[in-house]
Structure formats: C-alpha cells, structure tokens
Image 1 (cartoon, rainbow, N blue to C red):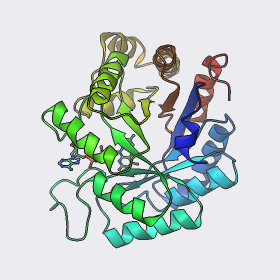
Image 2: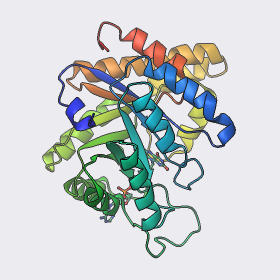
Image 3: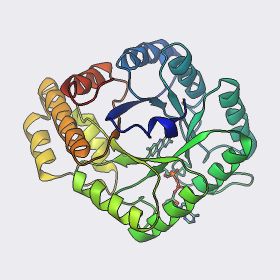
Length: 289
Ligand code: FAD
C-alpha cells in the first residue's frame, strides 16, 4: 500500500523504524526484532539505508520481508551521496522487482574530507526525487528538520530548499527527532505559511540509554529541554529506570501531538521491540491498530 493513502486516514497511527545489520551475521536477529515490531501492526515500518553503502545491501531485503512475510507496509530509505546515478538506478530496479512502493529519498551526510559531489552523483535529495519519479510509480517521502539542517546557517533558507524539494514530487515528509513539541508546532506553522502542504510525520525518539544521549548531544541543533535533561541526570546511570523514563517521555510527546491534531507519528524505536511494545501499550486506548 502507498503511504500517501495511509496518511489520508483520520485516526491516530504509529509507524516504526528499523536499521539493517552492519554485517550479515546480525541479519537474523534484526529480522526477528522486525517481526516482533510488525506484530504490533504499525501503519508502516521504515528501513534505513547506510549513506556510505555499508548497511545498504540489506535494506531492500528487510523491506521485502516486512511487506511479504509480516504483512505490514514497508518504506525503504534510499541515500545517494555515496553512489553513482547508475548504482542508485539499480537499487530502484530492485525495489520495483520486489514491489516496494514507498521510498524515503535522501541525500545522506557528505563523508568528511571527500570531494562533493563526485561526477555522475546527485548533489541534493531533490535531484534524486526527480529521477525516482521517472523510474516508476512510487510514493516518495523525504526528510525535514524542524530545528534546521546542520549545513544551513539560516532556517529560512532550509525551508526554501524544502519547498523546492517537495515541489519535485514529495508525497510526505518525516522529521528529524526533536524533544520539544513546540519546535514542531512552530516548524509546521512556518512551512505551511510557505506553501508546503504535504503531510508531515513527526519523528519521535524514545531515549532509553546514556549512549544515545551522548550521540544526540553530539548532533548540532537538537535542543534538549530542561525536563528532558532532568530525566537524564536522575536516571542516566540506571539503565532500567532510564528506559522507563525515556519511554514515558516519548509517550507524553506522542499524546500531546495527537491531542493537537497530528495523527501520524513515526517512532525511532531502534530495532528494540520491547520499546515499541511499551509505547503501543501506553497508547492502547488512543491508537487502535
Ligand atoms: P537534502 O534535502 O539534499 O538537504 C541537504 C542540505 O542541502 C540541506 O542543508 C538543504 O537545505 C540543502 N539543500 C537542499 N536542496 C538544495 C538546493 N536545491 N540548493 C541549495 N541547497 C539545498 N541518513 C542515512 O544515511 N540513511 C538513512 O536511512 C537516513 N534516514 C533519515 C531519515 C530521516 C527522517 C531524516 C530526518 C534523516 C535521515 N538521514 C539518513 C540523514 C540524512 O541523510 C542527512 O540529514 C543528510 O545530511 C541530508 O539529507 P536530505 O535528504 O535531507 O538532504
């Protein structure tokens, strides 16, 4: 099913994200985790794609299992920063062969110290999106950044680029994670004002351990509200307490978003079925699968 049709539904929906294993050795355990998450009957499951190529080869395969064996709509991410146009075309062909209808079209992070763009590569996600449109009847999603993309000094320029990207043929947007819903509401106001009217799925990350917090801290631009910091200060050294508090914080964000009229929320559950299950349990009367 195309995600743009799922997004027409007016009742609350949750989707989850899976990242493929770094090596083939991890394939079976990722697939087992995916199966458990699929059993929660989310609106779709997305599968990330390594910008450097390393974790990309299993994306199509896991996305196919989600759709064919677990009976859940799948969304395959596709980054282009480290691939030639011909290589990207081959992946699009594989997606077509496997009847995967939904692609999240991304540029990927530019590898440090490398000439960019290399000849016969795409420069921005918008170029990839234009190309995908010519390759088949896909539903195309793209990324957006409520706090601005790190390469852009001014948020307004990022929104101008986002408008251009959406106009190239984007059906929906998914946001970078954020921990303060007011940032999301303000972003929505600003993009709607600029004529970006496609559905926007807020991306919510349940932070369940200290390592994740260090990584988020290293990402420029993601604001960590005082309430969030207090949770980390109090529970960061107690893994079980941190997991419970992180899930509660994410649940709270999701309930607030739904209460404010946003019906489709994407959860970065990081291959952890227990986290996805806890979120769905907390929302059992709010989100009906
Ligand atoms: P673009 O839309 O191309 O934007 C990149 C930068 O270029 C921005 O600063 C933008 O303002 C600017 N820009 C865009 N178009 C133009 C233009 N026409 N002219 C001038 N400037 C322009 N990474 C992975 O490696 N694998 C994944 O699976 C993955 N999944 C993601 C999922 C989501 C929901 C999000 C939010 C991010 C994901 N990323 C993933 C990270 C993403 O690849 C990086 O953030 C990357 O740096 C930007 O990708 P993009 O598609 O947003 O790029």
